[in-house]
Amino acid sequence: MNAIAKPADPIEQAQAASYDELAREANTLRERINRFRVALGRFFVAKQPLIDLMCVAAVAQEPLLLVGPPGTAKSDLVLKFKDALTIPDGEYFEYLLTRFTEPNEIFGPVDIAAFRDGRYERRTEGMLPDAEIVFLDEVFKSNSAILNSLLTLLNERRYTSGGKIIRCPLLSAFGAANEVPTDDALTAIYDRFILRIRSDNLDAYHFQDLLQKGLNHEVLELDAAPVRPLIDAREIAALQRGLLARTNYGEEFFSLYKGLVFQVRAEGVTLSDRRVVKLLKLFAASAYLDGRTQPDASDLFVLKHVWNTEDQAPLLEAIVTPVLEAHFREHPQARRVGAVGLGIEALAGEVERVRQVLTGAASLGDVQLFSQLKALGEVKTALAASTDPRAREILGRVDQLLEAAFQSGRFGQI
View 1: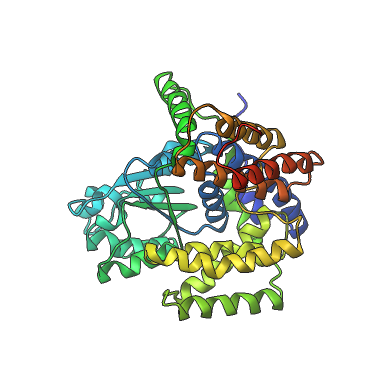
View 2: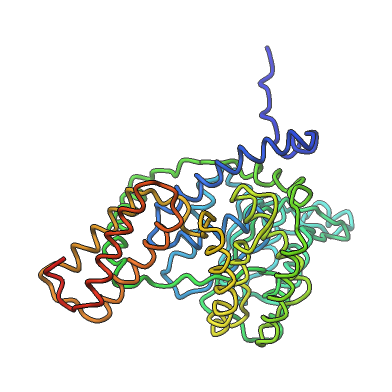
């Protein structure tokens, strides 16, 4: 009887591949990753920028922290991200941490057989050291025994068990917290999460979409309908070989990055040298997803997510946004993060929906009106970046709506 052939391991294939073969594979994989993130965004309302950042972090293989109140889809985002990857359950690990969580719940129980032979080792099968995708909920509420081991594991992909160093296959690590830590003892583990992003409750504008997608989600849960995997996690892991080698950092980019780093630090935002270097991988990942081998100013949007306290986010926005806007004025065809993947039909439908709200019989309050105008502004930005020939006509309808809104509080003439 012929043996069943074992599927080829993408990482082993990458190790044996030539530089040119890796480049061709990387181009094909990029298209699939971009389809992956757009498809994943359809499960959620107004979470596409967050999903985009998760994909950048996954390609760069750097940890990302989601911060926000309970019920803002932090856990669901990571679960759907995992479900849309081809990854065995044994290679995904998640846990809700508390101060009472013991190391054997995270790193595996003590190996009794080895202990009888005088060796203190852990059985790590199915536990965090063996996982490719890791989600640690309320990560900062854990105790020092766990946090100290996480420091090396997250940064160096190594775990020490009984004097033996285990190489960990970690691809992506996601943490979640209701608030950022304020205890100095947590500074080191907090610094391991290179990127931080908010996941907030949605505003009134998105409420109807939230209800509809929430119902759809509940139906899927009741039917136990699985999310169809779109990409193999180990293909993303294999992508790391040669990613930095294929990336060309120009002197102009380094100069711009250096200026922003020192400006950020001057505003009181602590940015360690370790994170400064790690961010280069994230710029490379962002450029790769946009089909470039050379990072440019558009990739610096990542710097908006290096805050240490939430009140620093507006400071970073004020520092980084002018650089991005200047780049997009000079390169109007360039990608704006979060705008890629929006079909022209979807944008036209959004404009029509807003028009119906503005011209409806119901009287809009100030908050509702502001939400609609904000939505139009976001659509206008996406249309300005679109290369579709129909974008100009839809853009004219947006301008008409905005002009009428600013001239009068009554929309009957639109």
